[in-house]
Amino acid sequence: MDLFDKAKKMEFPRTVYMGHDVLGKLPEMCESFRFGKTGLMVTGDNTYEAAGKLVEEHMSENYDLHTLKTGNATLDNLEEVKSVIRETDSTFILAVGGGSKIDLSKIAADDMGMSFISIPTNAAHDGIASGRASLKMDMGPQSISATSPLGVLADTQIINKAPYRYLASGCADVISNLTALKDWKFAHRLRNDEFSRSAYSLSLYAAETIIENSELMRPDLEESVWLAMRPIIISGVSMSVAGSSRPTSGSEHMFSHAIDILYPGRAMHGEQCGVGAIMMMYLHGGDWKIIRDALENVGAPTTGKQIGLSDDEVIEALTAAAGIRKDRFTILGNGISREAAANVAKETGVI
Image (cartoon, rainbow, N blue to C red; front, side, top):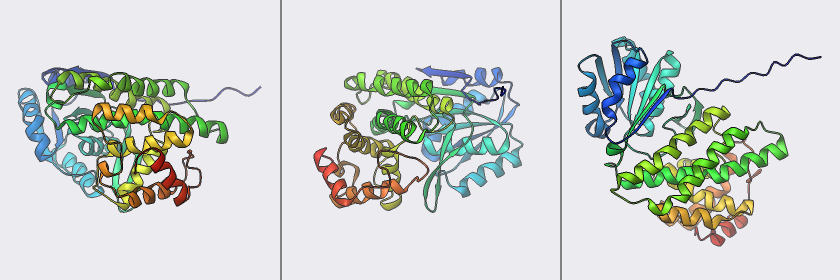
């Protein structure tokens, strides 16, 4: 009889602080993790003003904190982060900012064998607590495996000060889990792709929670941030359980990545995924109107025009989407024709 030898690694944040004015808990969190006394804060110009200064104030009494203001998650900026870590002998990283600063910190921490704390200044996507990162390459953004944050500190007071569009985009990103999950089950049935029922349930819970509360999402309302943050974080955790981005990324993300390559800078990641999810749910034969209505409720785009695309550009991105990740089987299969793409976009009101 063969011995059972299956094994799997799952990384989760050890501590999560979420709520009003929790930034002051940062030194306590660092102390609980037994960090060394020298660390690096990775931030940007705007995020430094939003939260970085406060982080420095909170950490100044007991820690020697160095600050690096950097830009997008590119290879050059990643090398800069790692270089500063070496120069300052930093033993931990504080990622203060949006997706790019957190992604840079994830990858740098993974490469350098370090721990980091995720301190989001907006809620634009579900990568706040996950071990997946997006790195901008010449051929477009690449999703790679990195390290999960050891801690997450999400101060709703700070996040609420970011433009509401960021929160709406984060909600749209989580809503789009619905089509990612359908793609995942589809690939499991047809290709026997590895499947995790627990990761599936977490991702589904996150999406359904956003949808159920979608009518309560409003600009300049900290309670809206509170309602959104928990499912956004849980959505990220579902990737840690699965060991991949499969529970949160399917054909709708491939559509978004196609836009990033063909028409960069038109809209935010979550906005593009939300519009993509409307069309992908239609292809699955599901109730795409639930997705559209929830996106409208939270104030996220539902049409190509609203994400800066012409009708032809929507069709082009949809036909190109299947080729973005050939290793990931989705409802798009090997691709759809321009005629079929145009029909999907018209039937769902995307164009």
